[in-house]
Amino acid sequence: MSETLLTIENLQVRYGGIEAVKGVSFDVHEGEIVTLIGANGAGKSSTLRSIAGLEKPSGGKITFRGDNLTGRDPTSIVKKGITLVPEGRRIFADLTVLENLKVGAYLRNDDISNDIQWVYELFPRLKERSWQLGGTLSGGEQQMLAVGRALMSRPKLMMMDEPSLGLAPLIVKDIFSIIKEINRQGVTILLIEQNANMALKTADTGYVMETGRITMSGTGAELLSNEGVKAAYLGN
Image (cartoon, rainbow, N blue to C red):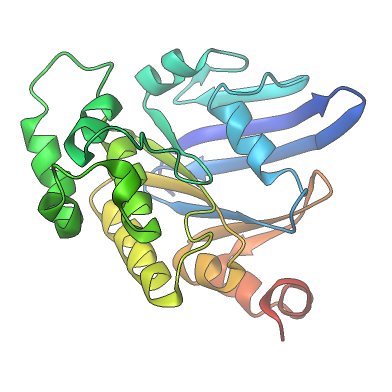
């Protein structure tokens, strides 16, 4: 078994009187693709946002490579080697593709030219559109740019919130192929995704979240063949 990179212990997240995450615990091992699946409102995004430092947990512990990151600010989380590709892309519409990528490296003070070339190798379409404004790209290209921007900080763990949302099926296939390639090149992935079928086919390990709790876990293949998962999330 590879080294445990991220450990979530009894994580709780509250918004006023509403408990969105109710004592969630799981591990992510180095080199894995891990997915959280579940209906809207299950607490998946709140879990990722807590790890990224965008939400303060009301309880529990987040440990990354042995360091307690619970409640730390987003900048220090990125410095530790965790990035988030947010739901809805959130690229900078008025900046060019290249400028967006440079923003992703804002905490670095070394030469980033090799990393820009790496992103362009992963996403040739971004290279073709290097001087185009982010807001003029298609939805699929904006998703590629959001992923490329996240890679510019050289993360050990890249978290992705609904990367296939609103994209055509062919583009979804491309995005998941690239997720696998990024993982092959040494980046651990934690992914939340409404397209449970595609997520479980891609993931080494999967967790099912329902109303703020993890109710099931297993390998991607095990969950794909589970009758309860099939009925609830795979449409068969």
